[in-house]
Length: 462
Image (cartoon, rainbow, N blue to C red; front, side, top):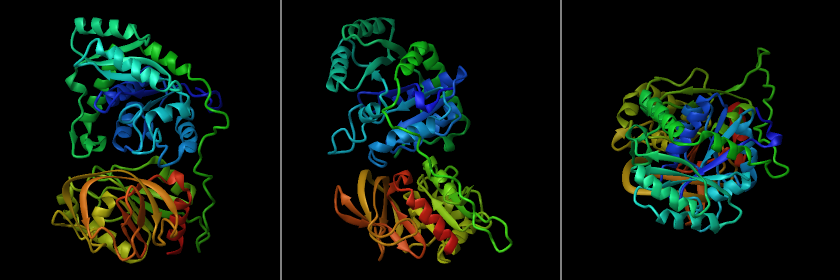
């Protein structure tokens, strides 16, 4: 295994645009290398929660995000090293097209920026299904656009035939970029999608396992794994001064009246309806003194015994609205905890679950608001400031976040809003009531570790 100090071997899997097949290739490469006995660290550029689930299935390790907008460029290297600690090699899946980032922010949060911050070679996945010689012009543009981005090779995807492959290889040779793989069209590796992207692993069970295995087999058969590993090992050390991020030491818990240690018990929603969570959030809660327990709102009829705080992240409650509504026992348990003043942090799906109703079906009724599906996709990074003091942040705390939903909550903000959006448009959003902080905004707590500490302290004092 490789010490973080010497530079973890690493590759970035990118593409000219979304839909080129980079998730299939990245996940398949992770699975193929893990199948060879390597400890593979999986990473995803950007705020995406779904792809890391497939990465985790391929590697047996937690998938982690690297987002230069949410966390700042200075944390990309440390978060990478934290996730890659003890691994033989890291594979980083890009987002959108290689040079696409936060709207109006230049290269910020792009795959290219993360590749440069990590000094990692890039393997470009090209959908060759409708081109032959033109692939040379495309590659020439991507190679020459930013000299600081090192395109170490190309994987040609969706190649139709042997003749098509010959034409493509001749074109790529003229650019001087090594062909590191050729993949044919393959139905078994397709992953179903719906209104917010791929269907998460937690909802697909054995079908997801089979799909990841098929991806691994396809990449192992069609790609030069030795050359890819060699390219990863040529990445060299990270920029000077990079050290692994840490959530902080796990504290000694305050003694209870009985003299025993008494961690604050924080319940986190999981299961198929609530799959969106960053691994660092749990790590930060534990470091702040919490005992973290998970529960499934589709199956558990009450919150875990002794729950003092509740975190309900993102997911797809709209898909499971009938089942969530039918679980009256848990809805009542959540409402009672919220009404007691205990801290409750709800993001996006959690916001919907706390509403009075979702698409006409009763939810927890903690918030006097209703939610419904919408045709409009709300998507993008947000620059936000806390409007009201809450269990997560004091008024005036500035955080960057991300919105991604096809639902509408009416009203969109309570008497004490959670956030004031500074960009791209000015508005207030979300609800702060008693100990509840509910909002559409997804945030990454590694950018502001005080969020987790404040939340656990509120668990202790509420």
